[in-house]
Length: 76
Image (cartoon, rainbow, N blue to C red; front, side):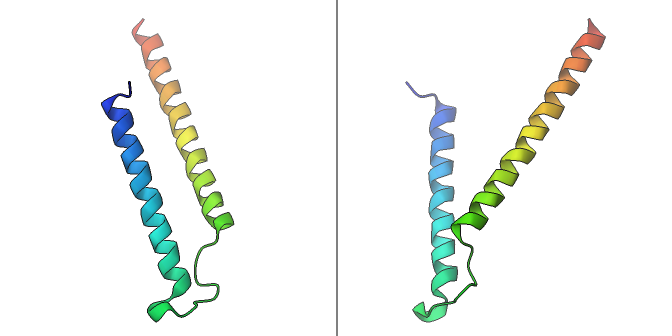
């Protein structure tokens, strides 16, 4: 049975995906439905951005874990 946090995160993820899809469609179609050419982001650009954000989050988790471990060792 999923926890409340899992349900909330799943909802946020679905909303974010929908908003990104809406935004990329509106950029690609341009005003009035006319094609905007290369004005929008393509899938590769979005993947690179997401991978960069994941890398930053991973480094942040590693840094926080190291700091907490160091502090716990000082207390002991």
